[in-house]
Length: 352
Ligand SMILES: Cc1cc2nc3c(=O)[nH]c(=O)nc-3n(C[C@H](O)[C@H](O)[C@H](O)COP(=O)(O)OP(=O)(O)OC[C@H]3O[C@@H](n4cnc5c(N)ncnc54)[C@H](O)[C@@H]3O)c2cc1C
Image (tube, rainbow, N blue to C red):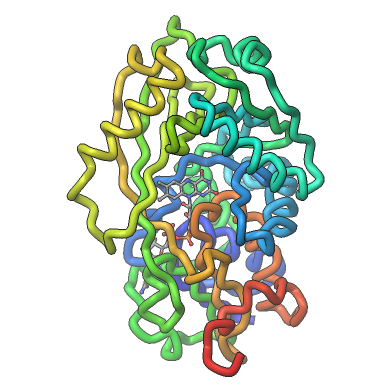
């Protein structure tokens, strides 16, 4: 079976790697592998604390994929020789104002519908767990069972693993997938998938990458904060990097305007929550575009007998990489029931 994959972000590469391991002859087409959202992402892998009201259909798939991550990371590291900085880290979610605390209580009710443990924390307990939190914190929740990875390392590892599995690469922009010489075609071009008629739009996001010196104290694990109505996260890595994110706005593919305001907001809110952040070195601000469907759910499944969509992963593309790769590789190789119906890429078409 000859499989063509359009797009070499994390989604396309993971599908290519999985399908090659299942015996397909795979070619990946991308003029600039890794130029999309996959190397911008923070790397939070959260089954509960990423849940949003109205997106409940995603939750079982998120749980499946997040729970698959530890095994996927180990397999990927072994296949590529590239460490991906996978970390088991409970998520500590805290609020600064009374309204923030109420919002966390509202969200906690949704998180509990996933069946995962969600422990309510008094302010003192939250600060015992994370001593770098401001003393003004009003409490929150602790959600064990989440993970984090370094998405740039994951992308490098997927490239190496796919190459070692025999995947071929063509540095070319695909204009017409129907013209590709293959039995099956997977469209995994992130926001670029809109050019193939898929209903994705770019939802812009900026993240900051900061660095703590070896002697500076750092948060122990992922901290999510609600700071006077604004949601932020802080993701520390073992090598001293700290990612602070993320803005969410709709400005098409504009990479330039508003980045000063984004940096200002992210620094202000994160320093309000963890004052030590003001002491770190600011390495970079990066802007990326989340491929997003009208209902914020992924677009995964058959478009026609020869073409499969694998995009629209919005804020969750790194978390959803393992489950998407396994299920899309299975679909391409003949398992017609591999994908949940809620993700049907044709669901927005008239009469569907
Ligand atoms: C600020 C920010 C923070 C995020 N944080 C997280 C997080 O913590 N956890 C998480 O799970 N997710 C996170 N995400 C979401 C995640 O990054 C995306 O959902 C995911 O990277 C999408 O991967 P992809 O492979 O579909 O697309 P992309 O990574 O965008 O890759 C698409 C690729 O397709 C190629 N391409 C486009 N058009 C064509 C064409 N016509 N022909 C050939 N190639 C083409 C591009 O060159 C690109 O390489 C974040 C996103 C942003 C922006």
